[in-house]
Amino acid sequence: MSTTSASPANSWTKLNINLHWLVVALLVAQYVDGGWMIEFFDSGIENTVVPMTTVGLGYLHMALGLTVLAAVLLRLWDRYAHGRPEHAATDPNWATILAKVTHFGIYAVVISMPIAGLITWLTSNEWLGDMHAQASDLLLVLLALHVGGALVNHFHFKNNVLKRMMPGQGR
Image (tube, rainbow, N blue to C red; front, side):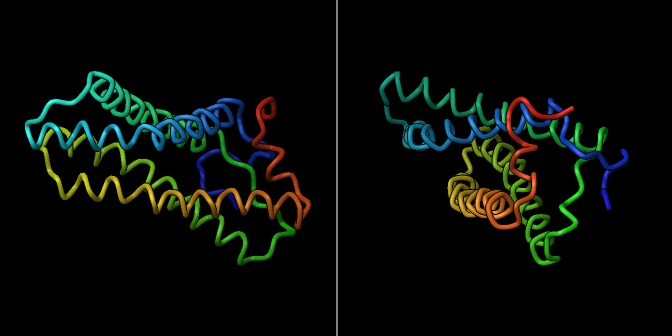
């Protein structure tokens, strides 16, 4: 049963699929760029000078983080407005529950991280900054579960869960 206001669909919208892969690309960039942001933030706290590359990559990290937040919120709106495909009826109940918990966790972390990062920047709150940085470890675990689940659906359960999220698919 769908938990959205729209009726269940048999595929994602093209917008939802494109936003999914945009967020993937942005998260990869954020992970690569994170070290520079830490150095940039610490330089502000310690009142030290860092190379302009670090400054530029620090600001890039902030811009990409806010872009992730906007893309995820737009994706959730699209999911609510246009429905989401049902979980495969042939999947065991535990797999559906794990998928729902994993998706909830991913959305919670991916929404809270940019907000925490912005608050950290605006308030120079080092504790919150540490939590923001450590949340990337939790996100990596959740993403590993997500990718693993997609692969299990494709190779073990032999359903179309992975195929329907591939670029070029959708309605």
